[in-house]
Image 1 (cartoon, helix red, strand yellow):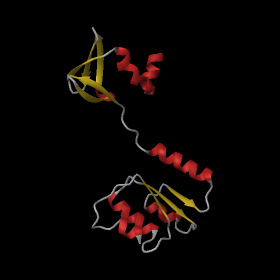
Image 2 (tube, helix red, strand yellow):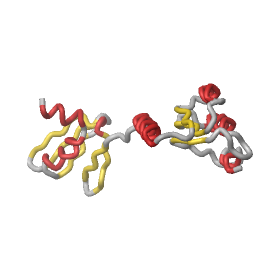
Image 3 (spheres, rainbow, N blue to C red):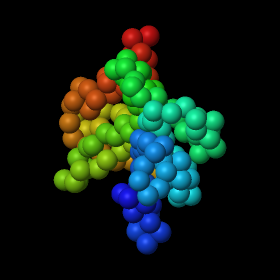
Image 4 (spheres, helix red, strand yellow):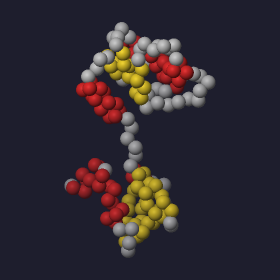
Length: 156
């Protein structure tokens, strides 16, 4: 019955990162729950966990990521979770700098250049603005070392 209430049209739309559904549930089948979920959420990573392979082909109709048959091993679950994590979007790297006493968050992709002179860093952005922060260039560039694209460029 919980699955039927979770997808009730009266409830506010809920987005999920992942959903694990059993095919055989009380009140609403896992396949029906998946069809309801897909009406509002095309991006959810959908996994069926069940004892039966009878509905595996039907899982393709709802774009299930995987059909995990019970009992499953720890290795199977670990591999599935690794695949799921690889499919999740990565948060965009952000640099926080003090500008005129306020913290400003800049996406790395929005920084065109940074120039250091007399303890001030002039940061030119894609919005055609120049932001000025007071700090050492070493402190400013330290977070960049964690980004592979920047660290490999520095090694070249």
